[in-house]
Image (cartoon, each protein chain N blue to C red):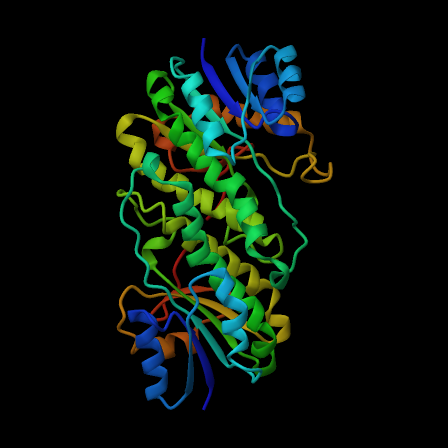
Length: 224
Length: 185
């Protein structure tokens, strides 16, 4: 049985990933920041853990607690939007840093902490969540400054990670969920289930040749 | 004569750019900022006159680092230096760029684009230059309505002789090299 760690699984896309990976026969370890969400994940059939991806001590403690478990995949799904409406002149350091801490730095720190677990596994998939908003070439209307930049930086991190970890057989790929009904989108867009089903299909077909790509739920690459 | 602000003129690249524009007879004002706390005072010290050109330069070149060895505070420093500081300065100087119908330029590196190989792992530089590219692209989408063009120039050496021509010729929202050739992202 394949085994995955899903970070940021308390709601929306992460929670649906838990449901669909369980249905597909995977063993699922899922994290949330609070105990109530953890209880709900346990009820679904996952092994729940508490994790704050913006806190390195929290990441280190979880990696240590799960040290003996081989993970076929680690999916860093945690993400925040920040205030998408801020104009450039209203964006201060705390706003930008806050978005990057979760969307970019925490994702890299988590994946790096779980590299030993991935090396114990068979599939060796290091996964994160990107967005069409990460695309520079597709950005012709501006707005969402911090969110866009945090995801662009994540793309660049994963490109480097893909090259560094390729010799060890770890596939580093980012996924794009599309515009999905979640709290982040104020429940506009497509339903969560088909988006996650599409991404799960992508994950199941990944090979080392896909390392460094950003692949959408529809199987299409996100342009740089 | 144009009024030109060069952020990062204390480094080799910025210094060369500032000297080049001064040689051409422009009024060049260096802007030195190292932390977020410096920004407001440094920008205020420039006065309130219109600015024709703001050039943001930074020579930083990260050493290769394994992903597991990258510390969070180092990532924070990279974000501050390569993305937040130039972006914040640009935002604060926007009214003066608008007053002159000016141009906003970010000097970057060709090896920071997504398609460039990075076998050595420069996690402390490339992501933040890429983030800055994205921030500039957003500005390029929003500021032309006020008469401000936003461009990126990839230049890997402090030999800045070609730069004024490249800056003058660069179109809003593009990333070009010092010879004016458009690059990918």
